[in-house]
Length: 125
Image 1 (spheres, rainbow, N blue to C red):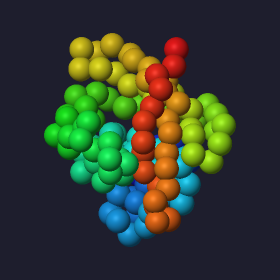
Image 2 (cartoon, rainbow, N blue to C red):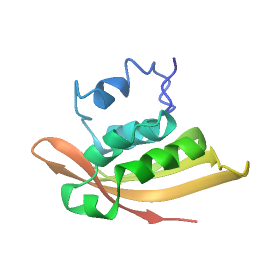
Image 3 (cartoon, one colour):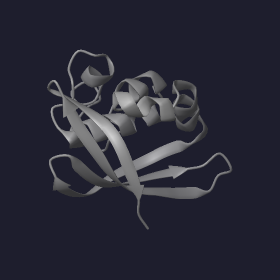
Image 4 (cartoon, rainbow, N blue to C red):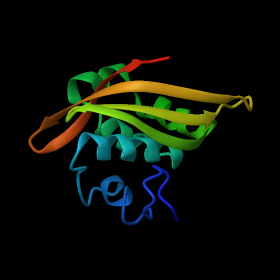
């Protein structure tokens, strides 16, 4: 199976080792890609685990899982990487009512003890 993150690699050679806990994403971009894949699959638990610990109170696993389930995630496009801890991306999906949507975000990540976490995102037009 091709990896949902649009890397061109197989899921087994790309995001699966991060989802199973076998490895941690080595870069902010790899974490961002694996989080997109976790929405496709969906895997709300992974999304919570990779959220910066002090930010987890603003999210919950069930909502993240549902957001993955109710939408059909179709494509990920990396737009820019302005720094090692920031990734601008476009996530394309079809919502539960059948409308095509675009989620364009500049995400911020932070590394703690050699592990990347998602901190926050700024929505872009």
